[in-house]
Image (cartoon, rainbow, N blue to C red; front, side, top):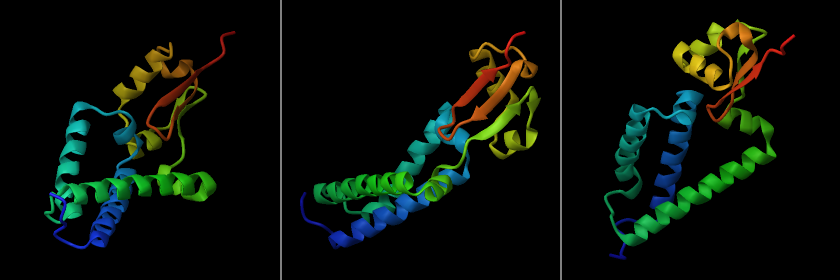
Length: 156
C-alpha cells in the first residue's frame, strides 16, 4: 500500500511531463473547449485523464504514488499560476488573449473559425445579453476562459 514500484522522482518527472503536455494540447484546441464544456467535451476530458494515468503512475497504484502525483500536479499548477501572474508574456502564451468576435455590428469570421465557435453558440451568447442580431452588438469578445462578453450598441 505504501511502497513505491519506482523511485519517487520518476513520479515527479512523469507528472510534470504529462502536465505540460496537457496544457499545450488543451491550449491548442482553443478557448471553447475549456470554457464551454458540452457533454462530449466532458467525456473527452474524462477519457484523457484515464489515458494519462498510467503514464504518470508507471503502473504503481500505491497510496504514496498517488500522494506524490497529486502534490506534484498541484505544485506545478501553483508555479504556472505564479509565473503567468508575474510575466504577462507567459500569460499570453499559456492562457491566450481575448478575441474580438464582433465589432460595431460586424462579425469577424476568421476569429470564429480559428476558435471553432459556431454561429449557434455565438447567437446563444448574444440572446443571453439581450441582443437579437449581430447588428445590435457594439462588441462581442471571446474571453480567455471561453465566456463571450457582449456589449450592446447604445440605443439612440
